[in-house]
Image 1 (cartoon, one colour):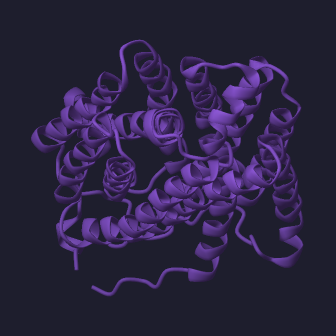
Image 2 (cartoon, helix red, strand yellow):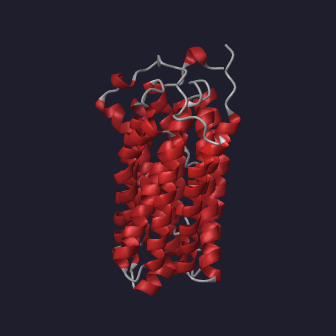
Length: 398
């Protein structure tokens, strides 16, 4: 059976929009030690910056799914750019923890709007035969922004201050909103809504899942985002600054390297999930990610710290492959709302993770804080292996 060609030009435009918003929303990550030093915030309160970022995402996840189904990608990206500009400006003006948390929440809202929009588009632009590969484009766009954002944010901060970096983020958010508003006149986003799905009869229906199977499926984004918020966005830069004495630029470069590694792993994971097995990609990825996290528990040298970043980054595509499974189960139908709920659960992990691990790090140390994340990933991996059905359509596989 022939597989229709993907609309590469439109995919590139949507991917570029996801990439740009991901870049700017992650300026803040390597700035945590500098923000803490100027505003007098300990590790636990710094962890709340990532927590409020997650809270903003939680507030926007469900509305984002509804909005992208109703308004289309262009308008939602404009709204995301406005939220990004407001968040960056609030960061720039902050003189205490309160406004910093508000700013992080606005950045989280921008991130949720862009990510749900992009994920919905890429999950429906192709049929089941290429859903994993199409979702890999989304993942590469998102992770590419996460890779470059901390590096640029850290470099700008070293040229000025962390406030300079966030001012640039605010200006870029405004620019993105203006370009999005003007793009219709140039035909850049001609489609009002995301593409209609080509597969309407999935081999396994989402309504057929039992309670434990749903826990396994939704446990993947929860554990993945718990890990992302706890480690790369919180403890990795704190350990790099406090324990290893690294500069903001060095921390940003290391986080950027992790993002580049994620960009390499994402297309491979998507490709394999289309050609071999969804579960055959998910289970090893979760276990290997847990192994990478465990290295950070004993990272008292820069070498181990970097090794942990590389390993946990390389296999961090499990959340996107799980979204591919969700698309298979739903047959591509009502994906904005479904992925809004899916991302809501995941962002619950992003909300809880930094607060829990930040407090554990502050009160009982590095190893217990990190091992909580590793155990969570391992438990989810076992659940996926035992109860989650394989959803890759055999009759349409190539």
